[in-house]
Image 1 (spheres, rainbow, N blue to C red):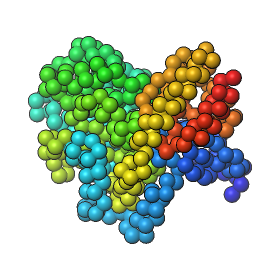
Image 2 (image 1 turned 90 degrees about the horizontal axis):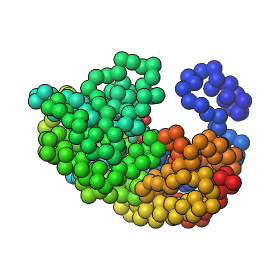
Image 3 (image 1 turned 45 degrees about the vertical axis):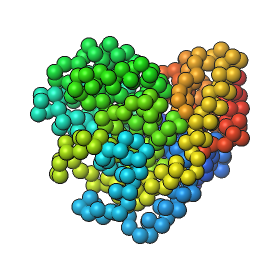
Length: 390
Ligand SMILES: *Cc1c(COP(=O)(O)O)cnc(C)c1O
């Protein structure tokens, strides 16, 4: 089918919930190609989904083999891959227990249900979330999202959420009552502008939740799965949550998400209390296992740390040269470049130059390179970025 025919079907039959115009047809590593054969360097990797790069060979091979063996059996049966993947997640985090689902919002819904189930016997069912956060587009996760523009028009908001100021421990303290069940936050805010939690804040939150006897929940949907150079972003801070969600890069492009709770909470959710038809299918888990193999055997996390450093060093050098850059921030390969009002112009100039980037918050260009990106490709991308700045 040619481009005009596709665009015509798009206009006629696909709901216009996204503004988009580029048709991408192929990807390999840090590169994608559009329908006209034009090549782009992709620093979006599916909004932090294809963290290993596009069509990572281990993942492709695992999917091909599993597709010929067993796709789906429902969660009425145990599939042999789910426990293996749960063990990998546990080994790379805090050794907890895992529930599988399909998207970030669904994983966060699970966290919210878990927190309410845990707290309700003691009259605790309110959750404190952060201003400027993003937790998803379902009704409960929207209610936990601290950016009013996403909720506009969908009222009434679901009850039971309050908002504190990210990186301001006192503001959280002020909201805690005997009805509070949990505090939820992203260790690095993604959609909000690539804003890492300060060490004082995250460590302070852990201490505060312990003192008050409430749960600390982390949304690692975007900052998890190696994005910051560690398997999960909170590991940079030397603390653990009571439970956390993960999604985006768990399947490197195959829908796969999960939430994990500490072993001591393993009995909160009992048989029949929570479920998901597509959660942790054999085909999805085969991708997830291949992703952890890449962490374990391909040096992906070290490369993410090194390349993240490299990007930030080079971007800080550009900051000296181009005053439009107000700040370079982030952790590992989750990078924000604050450019004030110039976001749209720089975003478009990057696209025109063959460089795909993201925006975040109102003023940041967000760079999410593949964790496998080479120095050569990074240099190529940085040159295109500089051209866009100029
Ligand atoms: C993307 C994202 C979500 C929502 O994930 P979906 O898969 O789109 O439902 C939730 N939390 C954070 C931090 C995210 O970045």
